[in-house]
Length: 397
Image (cartoon, rainbow, N blue to C red; front, side, top):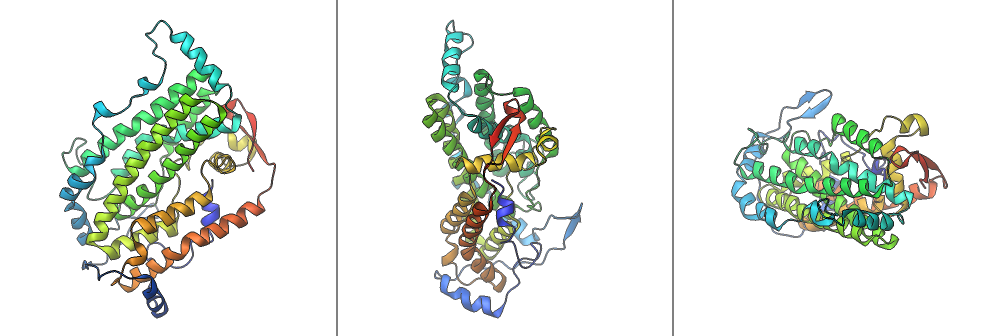
């Protein structure tokens, strides 16, 4: 799904670098959605914007940076326990034929028989999800751009650094098992997939988080839930197509993503307790910018020349058509986070934060309406050829 197209119309108003300037009207209207006790206030100075390559960088204030640095005990008590001990984690080898066993080839034969039922549109979505998972070095790098939480030495013994490394280690199993499974099926052009992975890691990603942990952990809260939904749906679809082993693999990955989602939303819980104004503003800022998918810069080196369209856009269209991840899921995630963080109940907010609150409360319905209009305008029957499946043609809409 290309949520950028759907959400472009929504991202109106003040620039994200100076979000949500207050108005008398917004403060008056927002009182209807604020209904809990007055929030604690953090006195903050205005940051001096730093511009790097045309983008805002290091936007967190000194006071908020110190707040994040002071959350180590909170991380140890509430977030780090959501990691699983290594000996309790599944490993790819648990889910695949064992190459050292005498019946290995027989089991590969059975795997190929099951996978023969998977249609091309499923293979495209699975390949795109695999490519996304295999770009894990980019995501660890992104977390380590965030001020106040980065791993300063590569082996720092802070709760933030320990979390980032252990999270990365858990996530690493996802791409491993998906890659090995799809290789054994013989159904895809693995070299084309590998080229796309290398290009994606080389290109990086641009989530527009400004080295700001408030923005960064709003992003990861949203993204982990999106990934959970996508893998959950690939599990369901694999079962419908008759591959119960692949369904189990995708289901286990989805469960990991759900646990990681809990961790990142708990980080924002902690920020909300300490600085509700800053947390609400950060949430609104990221929604105005729109949550870009981690693989938005994917490129196989040939799709655009052949199809005259962007590879990620076409992959997203197939994911949307198959119901794997849609614009409506994007809106539902927004609504879930609004409810999860009790945005409607916040009171005593500053003028800026009150307007941000009002903006957030209206946004999911606006996204749904835009998604409905975009769906109605789509050109039905449009197709694309994907290198990942030997340039076979797949319907986009």
